[in-house]
Length: 333
Image 1 (tube, rainbow, N blue to C red):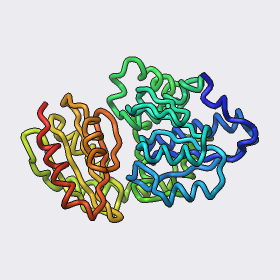
Image 2 (cartoon, rainbow, N blue to C red):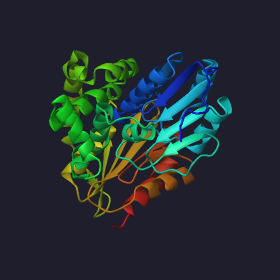
Image 3 (cartoon, one colour):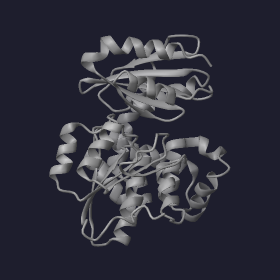
């Protein structure tokens, strides 16, 4: 099935709403290139929700509506039903969702979602495109070293490494460089990076601005990792992070490497809301159970089997956080 068979020549200006991480930017770049080749008459804009918010605010939805885009595409962001309904109201029959996270299908939009190492690799396969470097970068971005154990999809990565004469270590460096944009709150940098990904992804390896980002981020991560996490149970460790950078997920990932047999639970206050991450590495527990638990509490949440992100408004912290903490601490594997 052609995902864009309902897109007509009259829809001339569209917006690609994407996740802020490496896979999200690569997914946007794949879609941008595909649509630019297939529909050269169309104008495309990219948009990122507020970093750490897995939803669109009412103001953002109104902003997008006021811009008079004629179609909207989302990629690699596990929007809740309220946001999807809002998109469908603004663009009836012209909202397209691409994802690789588990979610009950939404029938009010054009919905494409299957398990895949990355959303960019899923989009590549769904659009019938040849294997490409963006899909490889995205898979390494989401799966890091673990993609090397994936006998089905690591050959995609290996093929690109050979074709472009690059190492796996360089792919990991590309992930760090791309992610550095969102860590330092550089929204325009994400837009610029998408354009580089579209035309010359390897140019990112010598980008001075992104390298400077990494220097700043590295020092802050090292500082935070010096703190000892608190044991909530035999299997759960908790750490409250105090930093102005958006590095909660990366610090959580690093702690998870240090304690692969534990569930890592972290929290950060930023912009009047708390972002919580819960990640596991070796333990066999499906974190998606926590997504539904959080949503039943009225919270915005998203993620996949090994990691979940949850947003708690600051004014609800004292009421809601103890419930979430107790739920995580009670996990038995």
